[in-house]
Image (cartoon, rainbow, N blue to C red; front, side, top):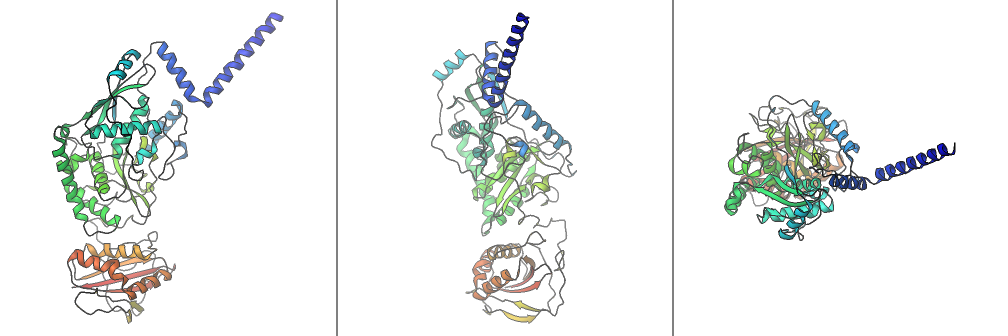
Amino acid sequence: MRIVEKVLYGFGGLLALMLLFIAICHYNPELALKIGADLKANAGEANPEYSLDFQTVNTTVTHGVLPAAEKTLTNNTVSAGTMRAADDEDADAESKLKIPGKVAGLNGYIPVKATGKEITQNKADEIAKELGKGETGSNLTFDTEMYPYYSIINETQKAVYRQIYANAEAKNKHFAPVEDITANDLKNAFTSVVNDHPELFWVDTAYKYQYTPKGSVADITLAFNVTANDLDASKAEFEAAAKKITDETYGSYSDYDKEKIVHDTLISRVKYDRNAPMNQSAYSALVYGRTVCAGYARAFQYVLHQLDIPCYYVTGFAGENHAWNIVKLSDGYYNVDSTWDDTNPNTYDYFNCSDADYASDHVRKDLSIYLPPCNGNRYSGLEVNPSETPPTNTTKPGTTTKPSTNTTTKPSTTPSGSTGSNTSNPTTATNTDSITVITVRGGGDEHYIDNVGDYFNECFGAMINSDDEVITFDLIITDKKLWNSIYKAYDKGDCQEGYIDRYLVEKHKNACSMYVEAVPRTDGSYLLRHRGVIS
């Protein structure tokens, strides 16, 4: 009996130690991975590149909350089981997508390709002695508002990110990493660089590396395309092509107006072509004028960067692997898919949309899930597709039509220095004009204008695309208090600097008399009817 008792005590003690070890590994996954790597090395097994992305991504995200709680990463290494569950969710989301027929197949994004080779520790030690680190990039800084992927990754990955960027700029292909880094962390760093920097058009979205049995990367080899052979000339062509688009925004004052012009100009000059050379780069779109979704998105990103507008490169799934953009405007973030707007005729179906708008046909993947959510609404749905007929009445959805005998306030202004009567005092009159709306901006119950500055921008945007002698348009403002402020702005002449002078300079016109009618709506907001007479 004593022998049996001792055996049971021994078994119980062993079981307790095993449970303690399991608990330690559960709360310290890095220890578990290290032990596993050592066991593999001792057994002579290879440590291949992880097929799962971003296992050690830092949780510090400066641009809003993560898309979903189940996607949140901690500072600890995420287990393969957790990542597999996320992959299963992605696959389920992808299977539910409904891709419209007219854009089906307009994809072509190719994920970053990393090719790894295991070497012995002795060979790695030789490389460390012989191979330099090239440009370390230690003095580089990156604005996280313009380069969000840099803010997503952890400190080790950031150091290698800076190094990759600096060596790419210097055209150094082969170098040793500045930090002890794993294959997976290297992939995060490289992907972040190419996602943040479309100007590195000569860097292919593929690289090679060698690693030790314990998983440490020994060296990194970048791949350059043909434009690197004469990089100065290639850069000149690239920058000149981008400038032709930015020049189109001259005279536009709001980021929204500039963004719209870039969108329209880009898709008018670029053709979708799966066989286009270098089609994962912005160069293919801007210089060759032929590309796939990756080229559209990187070109859009680069041109908006030149205008100091934050624009992010997004990768995911939309029937196939796909790329699009996120743009930051004054009230938040918006999705833009210029590839899917480049149809015949071109559309605004995928321009400045929310995540909810994209839910049926776009799914973010990989590091892009940590980009900010798109919940902006002020600049959504403002444009009318070319094939659609603009509204021909002045009544917004949900508004009440007022009798034409309403007494209305009609500020009339003519900019100083122009011909014609120069009346800045508003007058009261009876509205008998038949008004035809050429465009509706700030419209829809969810798109009220709530300040004078935005009102001026919307007026300018409504007028700038017309060459007619009489321009009419509607806007909706939040309340009577704002109308009083707008009334005073006309009374004081602030509207001239606010938008009329800008319009006259841009369109090379002499004078503008603007009449504004304020119609109260049942919800307390005001419908402003505008009629501008141009000379």
